[in-house]
Length: 445
Ligand SMILES: Cc1ncc(COP(=O)(O)O)c(C=O)c1O
Image (cartoon, rainbow, N blue to C red):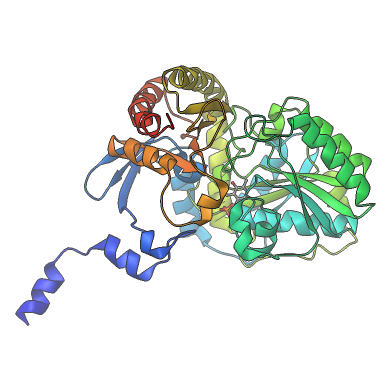
């Protein structure tokens, strides 16, 4: 009895319980050791030991509004209390108004949306819509890309996480990427290669699917003329252009969408993450008026129980209104330029920084162990191998000093909440300055 009582009084070891009963994602479970976090406020969050972190990656590049967007939190509470869930056959005010709002903030004649609950599902819907609309099956996507975790979306993903899901869905063909720093192909040559692919495939390709600015695979910004020309090439071959804006969307680039940076209206656009500021799970797939019109008399053969979930749509509507009311897109553009300058200065002081690149508050620091040969510390295969890389060590060093910065393969990914200030940026860059000594010291002499 006494020992039962003391067991009840002992504080729960949440990290241990979690490790025992919950899968860590994309990981060897023996290597998973989650830190318990308890609170978020503005651009910062706190762990259970009271350590505070400046969130320099917006968690998984999704907390675009920061951790205290009251309007979104209030909208969620209100909708839960008024009517948490109704079947997709009904409509609700938040769903209808968010659909209208997305037609307003997305480029050109994108006008009709299918709502889901993740970026993965948004991409699944895009693939199915492209196939239903064109009557063709093939999708061209690129090697350095991430589009989601389920079979369709991981099949169109190019990064090594796809390998364990292969052969995946049929009809997916991979193309090269615009990656000036790390590829032997010039970005514009890679584009002409896609033209050639489309020609050689005959009239069998439904869509070309790209992230307008590649996110987790290294923040790859194509040349200005790349995306407009890609749309032209796709249309020349009667294929659609799908832009996956799950990470690049909602102010990240200093424009509403990555496509806006290049003045392009895709035929289909996918969104998630910043759409709700990550307050609740929400994904969306928006299509042009012409594609929407097609489904008037052709079945839209797709849906989910939670398609257009009222609480998620209420959060999305409040999030988009917050971007507008607080001028967060303009702010991201302004502080994003400042961030870019600070990162280039950082590069000057650290030989292990191969390149800094990006747009707005969407930036990457690619590391190298041999600057002349541009030899990466982290290789693609490391993404699915055991153990940590030097890039992981740099992220850990930053965390030890109060800055959370995500990384993938060989690039530190900087995507802070949009309300970040220049002062916050100085603080985080100061910590990165110290952390990068780890990679400088690990360079090949
Ligand atoms: C460009 C892109 N598309 C799709 C996804 C998948 O989104 P989710 O993880 O919400 O399913 C991601 C996630 O990082 C992404 O970056």
